[in-house]
Length: 162
Figure 1: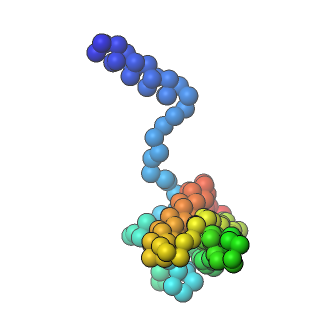
Figure 2: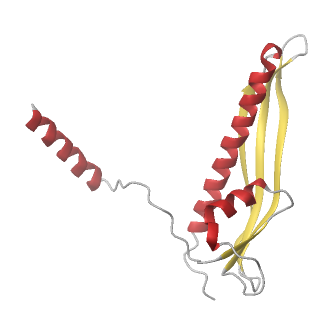
């Protein structure tokens, strides 16, 4: 029984390796240092700064390899469903970010790009506090998804050389 299990585990790992499967590893970037120029109060810029840590530097005195500009960041909440008496039953939450990546001399590496995330949330006036907490969690989840999409796009840049 134990030998059969061991053989099955070994066979499945060989099959996974043969199909190209590999665990997600840390992303590699074509730059060593970067500056992040946020719109005032940008939550996403703060997340990027937290992710890159010591690689983030100011624009002066020595310029970084690249500059990531957060051009716009916004959240929306729209009514998408009502009942027959006109009471709201469903909302759509949207998170939008527009960014670009450039070199200090102004060469564009990623053109201004907009990424949108949206989630639908049901609403019940008898559970307002729970729905507010759910809304906060959904916005946080969308923020995390936006950050991951931006990081993948930054990692897709293979060279910053002129």
